[in-house]
Length: 481
Image (cartoon, rainbow, N blue to C red; front, side, top):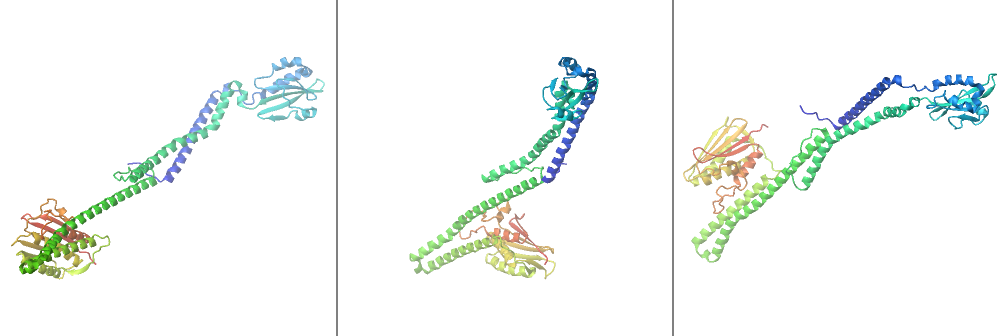
């Protein structure tokens, strides 16, 4: 199974929790490692109050010195007792004046400051300053000794101070560092999921701008909203491509129609023009010639009118607002009326016309548009009459099964020359390609029949009969009211 596509909001929330979880995990792991390092070196590290703990021993030594402490000659001896690598000291007289020490910085300004500061912690930055009184053997106040030190692990271990400070900095900064790192990694992964669909869309937009619609957007199963956006853009591209192709097809059909109309009208108009010219040249005085010319003019005019009627029908049924007007029709009565019309036309050409009806009841009712179905049958049967030879046969069979009505029309003419018989239903299709002569058809009849049957949600097909001739089958559904 593929990766589930989730909404962008859910992915953002999930990414945030991932960053938080991984950052906390990495931070705890780092702190644990540092803790174990300190535990491992615990016996080698001095505690943070190491120097503070040295003060009582130093003060015991100071009590032994008593007044000698105030003498500068005692400095070297005193400094042997004080760990100067992590602690500074000062010796003051009883007025607060500095006698000597490891630092010359003044913390006491006068005698009052001295008395106020004795045995009190003074703070300066991270440093602690504390002064202790010095008494003589008789208990007289002689002065004070002060110490400056820090209560930090780094200050208590000056040889490892830099490493301890660095580890302390890592302990403080690692949560922010890990949060930034995982934000970068997870954000980069999430951005890649967003970039690919957007890049694909931008490329698609550029191709559409260049009138190139022969492409397909790749489906990205990353973010639900982006997937929907890509799918919508792809649907738009397909719809736009179909629209342009239909527009191109309509334009081509329009050009073809204009050319066909011009071609089909040229013949009758040429005939009319020639015969009228002949009549103007004196043909009117010859009655036989006059009658023959007028008959030719009438036939050519009738052919032009027929073409205009078919073009008008095509214009109507091709319109998007064209609809079928359903009516309840008695099938048997409808077929008998049409059969009488076709029988008269076939008799004029010495063609046998046979009608057979196989219906459930003589009062079988079909919901259809009788005028349009009449057009369908007229175009099919007139086409059969045109191609059926003298003494030939045209047979019209009608069958029903309650849900559909089927018309099978066969003749024993030459049949269809083209092996792909569905082409006979295309506009202006003619198998003989000849457009000359008064008997030539326009290639619109079967196209009109096809559109009307399609509007009825039916089917129409053409094929050659095994015994010779053409066979056209029309099936019309019978919608229930």
